[in-house]
Length: 213
Ligand SMILES: Nc1ncnc2c1ncn2[C@@H]1O[C@H](COP(=O)(O)OP(=O)(O)OP(=O)(O)O)[C@@H](O)[C@H]1O
Image (cartoon, rainbow, N blue to C red):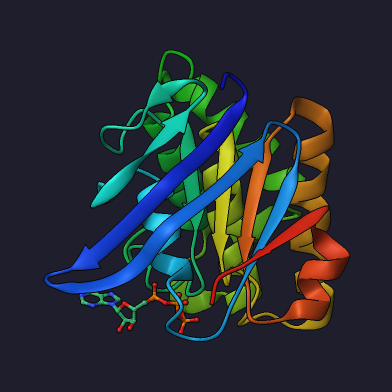
């Protein structure tokens, strides 16, 4: 359906080993859905399939009414657990956020426009001043994760999949990340899928929760 990211009867096998069987799940525009389940139940696998990073073995995935064939159109962004593994150590916070603007194909890519966009998205995640010129080894995990969030938001995806994205953060930074994402949901109808082992967090964050077993 338009305005939805959906898995329909999705199955997935790594080699001969089946991890997902007949899973159906929808994330509507402007909604926040939690995905819970024990370790190894297939949460990350389902997230990758929904993001178009791997095709399902059976069933199908649709994004805004069209079959998801491959990653890269920018409609679905992912935010991972470890910001250090998802950022180049050679890029400043400014460059990390600029990467999102280029990846999303926004604007002309002109220097002045990119700089203004970086400032706007950096301010949204409260990264200002000299933090923007620091490298990953010069900032905390929470600051780096906020740069990764700004990179994801700068690409203006329709859907954001957060795979244990707050697992390495303290309570205050977790609350800030959840609040910033919630602002995007309200302001422009971002649809969110949040994967977590933390049921309390999902209860507070999401309007509905799907459980994989
Ligand atoms: N690339 C891979 N090749 C083979 N098997 C894999 C691969 N990635 C994951 N698996 C297996 O698939 C199953 C589901 O893994 P997945 O990471 O999706 O679970 P999860 O619910 O996200 O787990 P966790 O909560 O521990 O992160 C596990 O048994 C895992 O070992």
